[in-house]
Image (cartoon, rainbow, N blue to C red):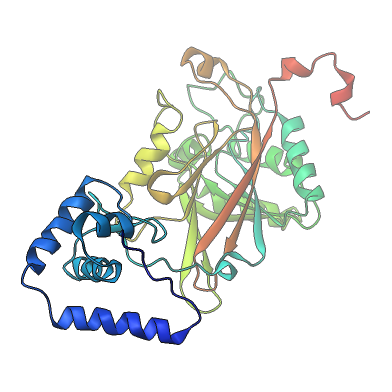
Length: 358
């Protein structure tokens, strides 16, 4: 039985082993090819220790190690279990492991409140939920709230019996009177192709700019229009690069699975146009998914289920979110987390005084 020589702090032993290995490599015996092939056969069977291969082949331990090194040079997939045993793997062995620098994932958190589909002027509006969300945002020190569209309910044949305020100017005036205003919070909003978009199509007016203009005339500087249907918000790294989040109010109906539509939307993005974070209104759902490495959020609503929604079998998920992420020096968004704030249908709170402010 042959025993391997242990490497110690004694440099002499190391040098002697290296000399033997070099000598063996320079002067290969006549049966070297057979020894080489025998080692391959043994390594294919399963994990083999140096001692086991030495016993079965008659090779000295350093000779076995030398053949294993040559197999690596010949691009065989040698897998080693902490150098205690070796085998030929079916899978390609990855290269050397490099340790990631955790500093890349450090930095300050960037925070947003997320809200959408408030549908003010609807008989099913939930001003109590909307105000509570803004109270939470203010208490949490959230500086910016992103609104994903449908601030007002608008008017068309689908909802004309479900609104309590009629007319473009009347609905915008109601919005400016009732929409929450909190110190230190700026609301950036987009407009949609329906609801407030119905006014835009009939009156040929930019509803987003109109709402912002009316807000400023009313002394409100907390409402900022950023785009129709969608808008990108970009973040540049300290050293280089950038990432962006996209807020959208897409069209279409609710799919059979909540995550289906966000997945299809992300799949449709052209090359180089994919955001790091996607925020979706329209569907009145609260949900997160991660298609194509895009954090995709459906951010809920502040409107109870309408008669039209019930007829279409569409559930309304009341609530909003708080989104937080970190931006690396190269502009990559590399840490993301969210908090979901949930509420229930108005009937849930009837007769329960603990839920109401006296």
